[in-house]
Image (cartoon, rainbow over all chains, first blue to last red):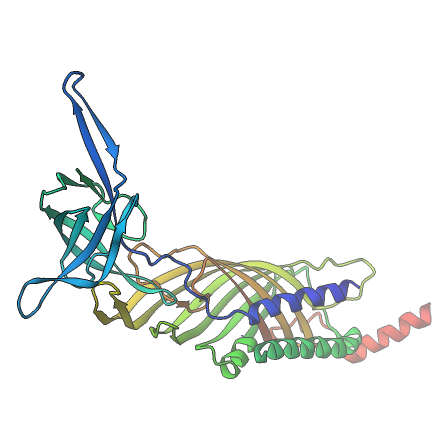
Length: 169
Length: 252
């Protein structure tokens, strides 16, 4: 009886070894810049500054790509957010092969253009998952029609979902 | 399925041979002298890795051999040496290629307790530990990144990467003396990686001697070995054993 149990034990282990197949990728490959909107109210009497997180009524975000012939910025075919309400945070894909990514924000009828300068870095994950491109933000320039200012919180944009930038109204 | 068949059939073969020869060994087995410190050494090769490398096309190969000292028939210091490699193309079309050698050293302990009325035998049921190390080069080629939003793709290589990996193993095994001084058996190994991949490292998919790169692996060896330096001075010939047996029966 002991012998049978022993043999079954060995067979089950062998079966386990022999049935191993190619592992599929289980790691996250989602690399996008995380941005939140804030509004700062300064009370003159109390002299206290209060920061509120904004939930926008209507937001449209689209990438702008430089035309190699004319040099002018043209909208990318795909729109990231289209007239969306209450989206916080928003996730922006940075360009994997160029050091700048340009986005046009439309808040109801008011538009702003934001340019993000960044470094790109290839990050090899594994044979199953392949390679991703991560980014390190250098500077951000924006127009100031609706957006007042931009603050970089975390420079590294990778698979960790953390707030990278804050946009202040 | 082919792999299962190979393993199961080889195990059945091992059991069948060991059972058949066990009958003979009951009469002719010449036990080693457990009072002496050094009782010779066994040289062995792993047949399982050779068979699986030649029959199963999973992109890897491995072959290994070892030497094991017999100290008092209780302790078995072991040194193992092998070569292994891989040529694997992933579902993302990335090619991983390596060829390298590996070494393991450690000790086995004989778990078989000798009962006062039991017949003397050289068969072993062992458990032990190993420390394995492999320094090897590898290439990762045809790595591709794509940008689904802005467009474009890029293909590049990571040529001639080098790393050293260290791991420890728990080993359980059975060794049966099938013919005088010829051993057959198996070892079941649980391997655990000590040196993990560092951040930013292009991690190898396969580690020679360890297997696929993960925190823990299982493997089995099917060994054939020969025991050198048997205790000739203390050993009795077949004829003497038979005579002694007859005398014992007469006395009873």
